[in-house]
Image (tube, rainbow, N blue to C red; front, side, top):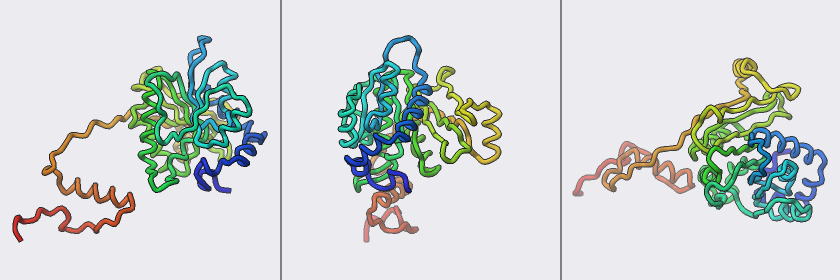
Length: 293
């Protein structure tokens, strides 16, 4: 059976019946609890006994939020499915719930959040469910707003299921362009069923304190550097992928008469991606016309 994100948009797929079936499944509850515990572990919050304000992005019916509550933290849950949030209200979850589309940004004040987790939600942004949806722009809006609302040095741990390498790179690139430092931690990379990918991000430039943790291998044990090298040599699976912070420089303003052939070709390619009918490129493209006919 294909994954939910390939069947319908999230607010359509998770209707009332699907939301209740999802929440009452003992298997899903166990998986959600295990992944949430791992995400909270990777979040590496200081053990000072002070409750933190956390985000649960794509909180659904509040299964992952229960893990945050059990550890004594306050949390705000975002989800696009009203049916899922209705079930969360019936279950009397402790967090504050918001019906919102994360692809349009989070809309929180800067620096007010101590950490964020997301379980099986970010990959939905890679799909264009409407004609107005551009996955790259939606990822940009999401990661940009997430970066702004996190406190300096805070972490975000986003567990996701990428359909392919290109989709995974698109997610990671959008995060790095927003200003995050970090990378992907992969648990059980050789298992097709148990394999889990976590995008571990730190708000701010990389430092000694922001080094990525190791992924888990067989029997749930942390993998060593030698294991990582062997995995990379054998089949290309890496337990930890490290990416540098890559915030793009501001574009220089160009005068109207300074737009050359490269600029025109980029604009034509952009229009093609948006579905417009654009003439084919020829040797006459962007050639300057004479002042007379």
